[in-house]
Image 1 (tube, rainbow, N blue to C red):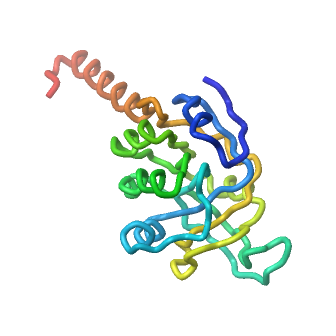
Image 2 (cartoon, rainbow, N blue to C red; image 1 turned 90 degrees about the vertical axis):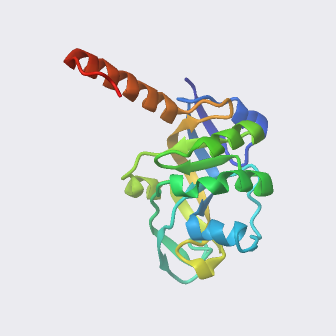
Length: 204
């Protein structure tokens, strides 16, 4: 178990050195993305002017406030609450995010599934888990909303955040085929069997 304090973007080699249960703190740039963003990018053929290569994306549709553009608010938006949404429904977008845009890290809550795990192995990526219900804390790690693309989808636009000390986040799925969620399922099944055996009930 190790901690990695990094500035984005990162290389495939760097990400492949991380293992499940390591922790990561991000600095630099983070991109916010959600269901509608990816549906438009991958199902409807839209593209983004942002360079996502080597970067992290976070599953979010932030609560923001429209303001005048300034040095403090370069995109014309002030962050109000930038929380994280459940990842599993965006499972099918992990591989195209990596193949077509070079994304290395996906941040969310609740985990992803086997197809994403295989994409992390094949292409060199990780899933970084964040604790649910910590939106207020996450927002303090965002220094500014630097830019926004596909903004007709607001709040499911493609957001470019400037971040500092974003984390620590937990490496929950790595590029070596390991998944914290598999461990949890296996441990849950073992404990269930132990309880049923203690009760004299046959497991089904």
